[in-house]
Length: 288
Image (cartoon, rainbow, N blue to C red; front, side, top):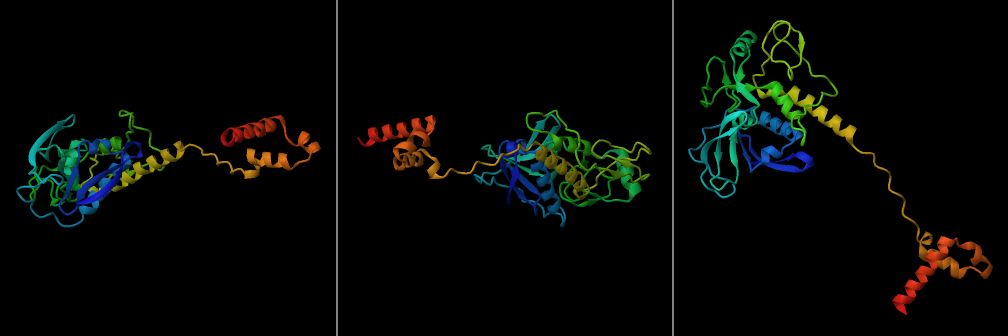
């Protein structure tokens, strides 16, 4: 597996293990929760790069935990978005997810609906299985290659999840920077896929048949994150230049002893007199 250092909440790095060839992702306990929006954006891009090749070879019947080598067991965990399958280490070292299972855990996918099936047929576009990347015609409910349920990215939910900030889980900030606009494939009307599931002009369904189609949305949300970070960056004052040693108490004492009797009365200000006397007393106490 490849180790990916992704950005977590509070700019803390989160190291996630990912196998692009097998289309598997390993999360240690709570690692998926600690990922920030920018961390998820990079992870989705890595998944998209891995989905460019051929579908992966059939997985072995038994997989082992990368930490303790114990046999992983199949589980169906439940979240507020529903149940999703995963492979769990019996010692609770983490979970092994397929691509679609990882997305289902965060509620970023949903079943393919009838209007979306008709839209794909009218557009003559091929649906790519989010689990294995195999091409599907969209008429069946399962992938013919890996037998996993056919699901599509929930674009409004994805945009909202990527915009969430730590400590403000219900906050979906207003998009900043370049507005995201897609052309409706039914009538050409401009629409926002992060807020609309269908065209307001002709009712044509908005659907992203593969991870490649989601990349413009990721780029737009990433731009918002970077613009917000630049606006919130505090102003840093320049650090003061270091003082020359002659401007310190030692330099004042040196000028005091080198000055004449008449110069001593005017050379040192009262505060400087106090500093020089204090330094003399300190030296007498240390070395006397």
